[in-house]
Length: 115
Image (cartoon, rainbow, N blue to C red; front, top):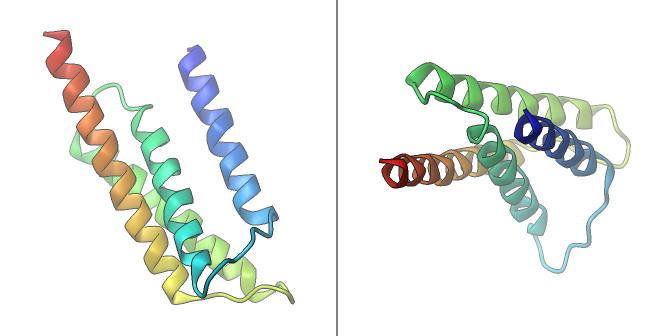
């Protein structure tokens, strides 16, 4: 139970910080790396909530985070100092798939160690 509370709190904090911070850009398109890194962390944390990995759980994680990414881009259309980008959504998707892959590796490892 405590694990779930901590992970959900981390998810909420990452989601909030990701939409409310202006991080420094040291080179062109560095914001794409921020998108990828943020969604990698979000996806990885969500994989840690899975008790019994199955296809439906993976689809739910990927779908939920894709909707979150789309919602973030739509929200940026209405913000004067931000702009929506299909490339941001593409890097969100890379991050989601990366986080799910790493999470699946960890779940597989934990299952092997528990034997």
